[in-house]
Image 1 (cartoon, rainbow, N blue to C red):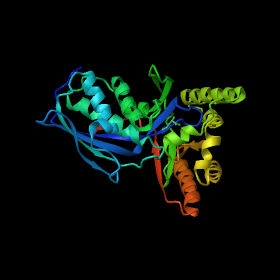
Image 2 (image 1 turned 135 degrees about the vertical axis):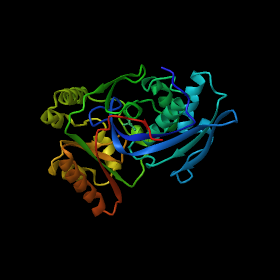
Image 3 (image 1 turned 180 degrees about the vertical axis):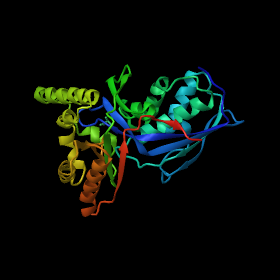
Length: 315
Ligand code: HSE
């Protein structure tokens, strides 16, 4: 339903954990923090202009057609036949690049959602998915909705087909918490995808499908034991772990502290643990953080429930 246009809109788009171990490119969830902010307002001058970017160390282009948030917004405006609308955009990056936290997806989602809200919400959140996807793909060159989907819609999102963008929200067990730790190194998604095998033994495919099905059943049935037995990745993690210092020490620490499961968040270097309850997540997060700190690797810990809201207007 079309609403009234707004003068100015500020939105927050949350970080996301993609893959969730066994769901390479097909499963992801949103967390409460960190996240990116985008502000948009009307302007007399026709076209979309990015007027300010903060928190990017000067790395991001101000040209809208080269910027992840700008590309997503332009794709939406093009679809609506509104490319001549005068709109100013500010982007406030509040999470690191190449972090495995869905940084480019957050910017893309924020760009498309902010503009959609400004012009009176002609499209639903779900309808914004392809435009946000185009924005993210302009940054990492790949087409997977496991960051964009949960960032936009919130919750735990399963993608049946990335081309058709056939996606569904899964139920979130009420005591499910995540501890996400970002060690301060950068891994380009392109590099982390490049080291994956092009062929996978059938035995591994069978295991991965079993675990993915088990995780989905565990979420539906609130069966933490089944969730725990299912959070394993036999395809990407064995290859990607070498990009993350102390990965197996961190994994042992997390499981030893009571995590249900532990793996790489998206393409890394962030890692995540699923936990039952906040106290457990805090304890697990602290033990993982300590492993990185011990080798002088600065890191940030985020303890969060699954964020069920996704991108949201904050002003
Ligand atoms: N599913 C993607 C990958 C997420 O693992 O490459 C990247 O953010």
